[in-house]
Picture 1 (tube, helix red, strand yellow):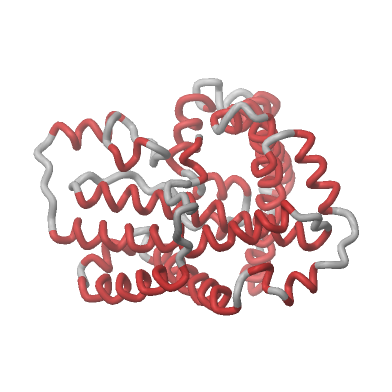
Picture 2 (picture 1 turned 30 degrees about the vertical axis):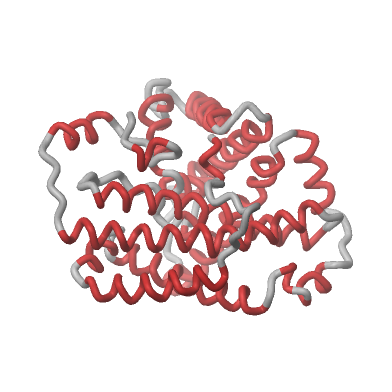
Length: 328
């Protein structure tokens, strides 16, 4: 329980896996050290360059009188803020574990590649979603007691998963919304799932359309999560679907960030997209592949930490300990 890399925000460990590791003699290999440093490097960069800079944009838009498209774009950005913040934390925690010879479970598998909400929850905060599946959803009957019971179980589990984040009703609403998404998705799957899928060359564009739809739905669901309260949530949605004549002005201004930082963010986004695609290709073992080539990790570390120094936000008022999931 006191293994410090994961004690604050996960990945959530299971006793049967971790106790077996702790009880054995710990052995640390050169590959462990290289893989650990590689993951820590990626995680620190995700947090302090990507998440923190985008977070400034989101907070400035939401706290202003922005409406319409400006606010919609802000929550598309927040989807990446919370991902890079928490995925970055998880990479750091898993990397620290590897430096001490302890292999913690993966917590993210490129969730925004998902073509369904169900798949999203197999890829997002894996250690928590699998915990709720094994210790709440399945003991309540799962999907073995008919569709109505399955849907009720789904709604309850996701509402509880929202409550796990805190007592603010916005978290509960966020969980309930995802539960409703899954209930609706299961309904469509039961109606259309048995039909033969013969899309041929249309498979790729259809999958892209599905991924876009999932991203949009997840982004709108983040609104109550960000807002916290019910009143603020409805106020936010009201502003979001009202007129806006400042979007292009904000866009021209770079949403408050300099062109240099936007250039860094765009290049970084492409880099992490390539890393995510390669990780998918290697069945989420990319860090193991790269661990065999220490020079790659060295070059990557020099480049990323140089950029981190150039665009980092430092000073007496900067709180370097602020991770979004550190408060849950």
